[in-house]
Length: 304
Image 1: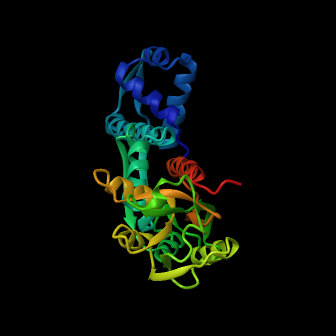
Image 2: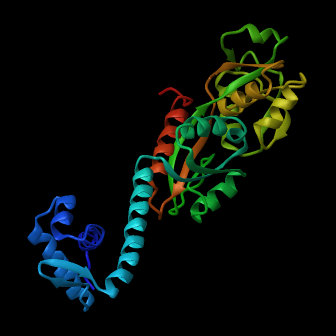
Image 3: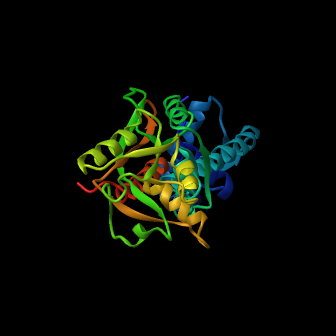
């Protein structure tokens, strides 16, 4: 079978108008062209569709059956084309996102809300997991986009890396809260909450204190910055955290924030990555959201 959409459209118009000339006028084609399409359609089907009497066409019983099938085919094609058009205009589709805790509570909901506000048919899944789980899920193509701490190289992942400049958390009544910038020397000898042993952020913090000839005192070891902020707001320590966690804290504690966040010198960063499956092309919708996420993260990056 080598039936074309144009043949089906011509057949439908002939059935609806009962005339080759009317069908040709509706389709913007010549009468010989429409006659040829009907004849070639009959040839492909192996059966006549019309009886021709004195220049007029009368549908055969087979034509009435084929007419309903043709209508269903053309309606389905029209519906499919509309969906594809909506997808191309970012009006339809699905985003599957998985994020580390620091960006799940406020950063991604705000970003997603802004992205889909004019796209009522777009569906979104947002899950929160640890960075190691995010890496596995993206590599297995279970999600479209992940935001995690920078992983080791993996051929199953497409990776965009970002170095987010950390800020120092101090209580509002701390004398350091009036400083424009807090330095390692300002924190020398003060109790600190740091990430676990061997974490790149902890290593950078140690290097920053060494460069500032300051004494780093670790009182608490934690595996995420949210825990560190809970200890810091009780006045038990200071901590350096990434801007995503700091922004989440501000959003959650709008009424009475106990902490303020100040730039820190020498700079300390948290390396995070936007992850996508390497072996599956991204849809137009996913690519557009990835670009929006990239722009947001670039705004939080360590200045070069």
